[in-house]
Image (cartoon, rainbow, N blue to C red; front, side, top):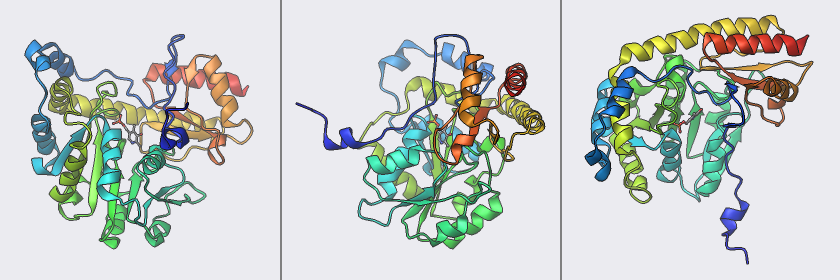
Length: 353
Ligand SMILES: *Cc1c(COP(=O)(O)O)cnc(C)c1O
């Protein structure tokens, strides 16, 4: 007897990057931040009291939403928080897309969770290929028949960013379709669409504490948009989990937001290293699109991505590789600390000898 539903048997789940513990790796495979979170975060953790844990947290994450609203320059009614931005993205599918609708449109090469969520919620997908230079084909997306869009900006795993002007022109051209802008890496680019959420009722911006705030282990993400869109996310959350943001996450994320100087400093360090490491990779003969994120997408015709990935792994350096057409020439390499990046560069030189 197989007790699994047809859906559980058929669905192809998302594969997260390896979190190996068999030895100490230079871990450049899941776009984690190489720096620890702000010291304010650790102080907030130490200040958590028994009562904070004994009681249920705020079902609407009200204090955190107020802190996010203040930072983003929007109202509390424009903010929704979830257990990681993955959860916010998940809830957005049933909130804004119909199973018998025209579907959710996204690029063929982008965050692969969109495809999993569409399948899980039974929503048709409309997949638009990237252009040959890996840029997003916004004209083709506009021409697709669909109910709305998922656009990772900067895109993963390419790191390519689209400026605010081009994004605004696109959003304005599709007023009757929702545009979900996944800004997981936006702090490394600085072209957030959050200010446009006041002007466009069809724009939902999704952001996370996992990458630029060094809080991947805390699991907290949020969406900014018009109250009608935020209300849709609340309706879905309350069908699924009343308390996605726990009391510890709320306190920790508020503390992270309070230390803007630390955040800006770590982001600047990573951006500086991104430039330096890319220049090194180019010198070694890699093709590397200009990245606006905290990772580099590096390919080299002579040795495929798989060989680079495997040889680096043997040498104790983890990067991400996908055995799929187009992607298989490339590896996605997280920008680490200067010391980690040196190890990467040294090992790559040896592999390419
Ligand atoms: C990392 C990532 C997320 C999700 O991050 P959470 O840790 O769930 O907040 C969402 N979108 C993209 C494109 C990402 O790379």
